[in-house]
Length: 179
Ligand code: IMP
Ligand code: MG
Image 1 (cartoon, helix red, strand yellow):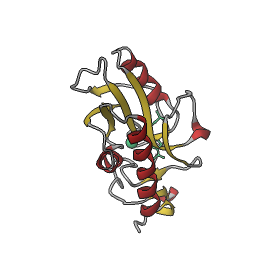
Image 2 (cartoon, protein in one colour):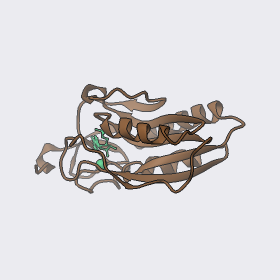
Image 3 (cartoon, protein in one colour):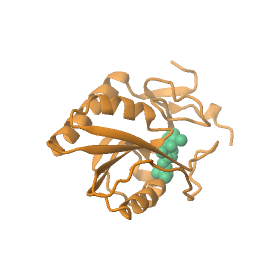
Image 4 (cartoon, protein in one colour):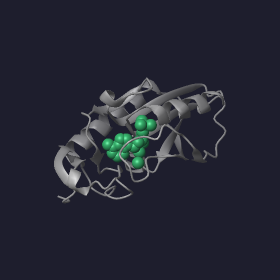
């Protein structure tokens, strides 16, 4: 395992089982409908790739880039849209795909922005959630796993743009944090 991981929190097998469960729920809820999966880059791309391959209803994918933490492990509270989706979502069934909901600040802002575009439905699917850190309440319609208040890396999640390639989710060893 990568030295920066002090403890494995979620194994590859548990990740796979969780993604299968989430895709099953989505396939059941959207039977007979079409969906657009909107991933928030960069963190969600690994989860998105796994999730979409288990989705059996007709789906398209799009991505947004919103401001993130940079090199720090706390949120700035500011959300800045750097890349918007290309598709018009009016009248469409949209599911936002996120790696982790932490303070909820990013997601509540993104939800407000997308709601104004009048989709037929707008839901949120997040692989992880850290409820202890919530500043803004957000409803997670499809939730993978709740984790304790620890900074985690791997499975798309980074610290200072590194460690996204680690195949499991692990706790970042504090020795590797340089604030
Ligand atoms: P929020 O606005 O505080 O909910 O921040 C959400 C974003 O912060 C996520 O999409 C991640 O990119 C990042 N983030 C929050 N917690 C962690 C973590 O433990 N590890 C890596 N990135 C995190
Ligand atoms: Mg990040």
